[in-house]
Length: 390
Image (cartoon, rainbow, N blue to C red; front, side, top):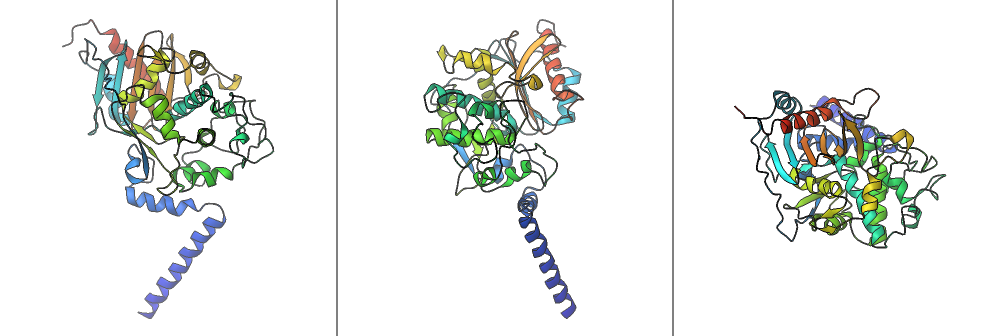
């Protein structure tokens, strides 16, 4: 018995030393990641993480404005390749909107048209657009206004130079390496931290801003903090006022917070909504900022946001991923594990895919093969619209 007690004492001491060492080394989030993994039954980020964290609710719209149903709704059978993509990568929602009407939709794994799922980085597009609205209202002078006007604690050799526009175009020069797999890096640390503002205060601006594209979740988080400081409103309240309410969102959304006490949104990710309501935001940009005849966001911003800003970032605008595939121009919101809301403005089509997994990025380009596969199969189906289905 004495040996057993001695064993437990030594084990407890070793565990304490290891945890203490992690905190001293700046990896204090690792034990919390472990505890959260035990609670959720998995060690990876998931579609319904909001169930395990504090959240802020974004109420549905005051108006009833459901999507119209297309006359060809669900009349075309999904292709075999599309069905294989859904099965292989754990699709939970797949939606095709044609001419601003729901043309096709499928749900899997117990999800339905009102089920909330994690946007992951799709919400970066919405945060960038929130900046444009704050400029329209005069809270922010322009895209060139310095971040330090709102976040005086920003540090680093180029902290005085970085602008809010640099944050929106991923050209801030922030000391941040985007890495979802290495648990010792900043991305998982911010995902789990209970004080995201404190974490952001440790990250300097180390490169000259506005010179090159470098995708960084931290830039969006800084932008959100700056918008809150500029307006006195949470990013959740701003998104509700600027977009969610006037766009007629049919379901409440929720945004994950760093903690119940502080209540700061993880604004680079973790906005939870459904395929139909994500499509509303895409439709706003497809229609040049107009919704139901009202100009909700400046048309010049819409045009600029879907054009590349840097030579080394020809596939990125203001939060939108840009490209052309098989002759079709598109812009899209994209998130971790294959969250896609893709706009084909010339064809008047929106494709939304939400799910558990995606393939790794293809060589040279910054997107995966399944991303292109969903596009291709959606248009194969659309091409069969007037073909009798067996």
